[in-house]
Image 1: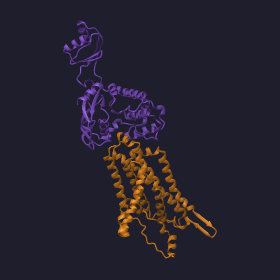
Image 2: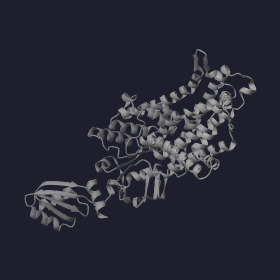
Image 3: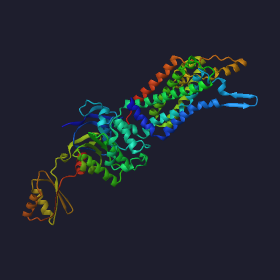
Image 4: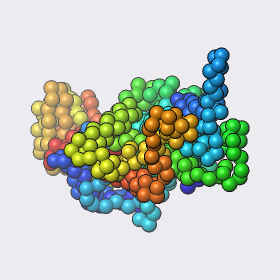
Length: 276
Length: 298
């Protein structure tokens, strides 16, 4: 495993564009901290976002993992191109001739995906912990470390999404087209949802849609805004009441893990069947 | 003799097209093999199959004693097929380090191999800045990194200028002289003739011949003769039992042998018959002539 990871990291390490994208990604992850600096102070109107409770434990885990997941697109570009560039440079052929098996080739990419997701999760954990410790109103040990399943969901979500990117990279062989396909797929899921909703009812539609890959991934971490007490009190004043389920369910995680396994297996099958 | 690669009844179909048809041959240790065939005769496909990048339709092949998996066997093989494929954004050394990691060999040989192919001064330049000749030489260095039991080269001089072709051939000869088994696929006959001891001749995926170069067709060679009295010469030759066919082309008489005959014997015989030769050459068919005979006959 170390050998395979080492091979893939060697390829990434010397590629300038991958390096820039990875660094940008981690800088952006850190930049969540900048949200804390949003502060309006115009005469009588005082607004300081960090004081609104977004960094309260355990809410900070939910909020930060939701926001950070948006930046995954940067890593998606790296992952799609690390796959499709092997095709356009024909280096995949040379790798196999040099004695890498097709299984090892896929595994080396998958280990890298896991490593990148793991590092992102650790990064997110550190940034959120620091922000929480500075701004949170509650700093009891038991409260700090509650709701940590959002980090697990974040990790599973990233691995699932990147495995999808890996598969698209192998399927399409061109990075631009693979990313385009990702976008088209997002539209397809949207259209299917629309059609289902139109023909049945919203409940049946979302029950079916939770099995679609991108939908399953976004279901993992639901939007955190309506959970914020400040938002809820405003809603109460205008007579609205939110009653959403913010929790992470085991079956949602299972669906995403199922897709991950399927994408990796299909990538291997595709590589095995193809003549290079 | 130790066999390195055994191919038996290998077949590859691309849709309707049969690229390799029931091909069998064996590569033994220590020889320099050439795979000869016109473009599209299945050379690269055959090599692709044994190198794990093309899937076979039927048949079998085994590396070494047949007990290692293909990808493990390939770690003991050095191969370049068609174009040199490396990561354009890495330097020569970085690319070779990657190959070392894949093959699981030590990185200490990198400088030595770059020296052999004459790329040591450019070792820290990016691959994308290399000329085609340099790329091809880097590919050879990469194939040599693990001191392979067999070196497989597919059209190594394709697209190179005369100087580049010469450099590559010198490198191949140097490697062959150290006793490394080489398998060279080419459609350039003089290339194969210059370096190979054995050949496999393919046409449309079918094996026409495999064996030693000099035994390719059973021939005793021919004489090229000139003299002032051509008619008398032809008459003598036609009556001689050693000659099969006689061809006259302007002033040049070409007489094909059907049994061994020494030039001095012929010269003496003709002189005794009163014919004085102005030109006498004994030759064997070149590989090109043999190849054309073989591919046209069938």
